Length: 308
Image 1: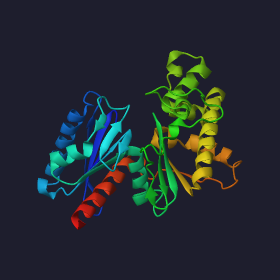
Image 2: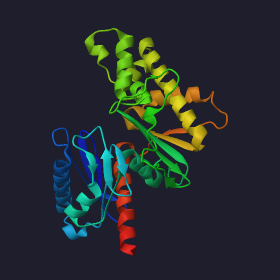
Image 3: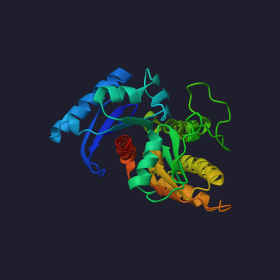
Image 4: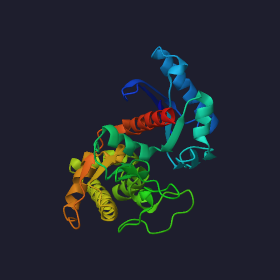
């Protein structure tokens, strides 16, 4: 069982031992985001999926979950997340194992998306790449030498805190988004558009992808917002590439998968060919990347526990 715990939605996928998805389930977490409530929802989803697949509870061999926040994958603890209320040092792995009596594992959702892309997506067979998720927030899942990089405090890939030319320079306060996320995250781009458009409320309220679509249709004000966003993303990709020498960047998330943004960013990266020109592709798995990664982690967890 793979679980994707989001700030607004909870998604589950049931797969066989080959990773083929045989059932899906989802619900909202807008009003029920405490650890206890989410665990109850997961239990309901597991029950419904097994029932629809005509499988007994004993057929479940492992469960893995992705969480948007700083996650200690070794101890199975969600350290902190700004997207879920009441989540601080939550021993989610232990809670899952106690609830379902099977091996469990957890990790950050963006790292699981990278794992999914490495297993079945755009980075299949590529051992040095970065999955860059750009949506409401910004984060990266980093593969180096075939291994996920987590860092000594499990914050590797928190690229939303990068400082770049043209972006905010003030240090973020506790609980606030980082400099790059303030400028390139969904709310940051929306705020750029509000300042730029000076138009009626209906137009000013457009989301990032709508602004990019207007840019593609010739709106010069929207084009300015797209150009700034593309320049910031090009800076970020180039800087990460200069440090890691990753062969590929896989872009995902509602904003990261925008064709207009990728095309504009590619154009700017043509000027940054030394020491190596970073290559960009859109995620093959889309919104399924986190779930596929969670399923991969569950399969690995089941195999390791079986061998031990």
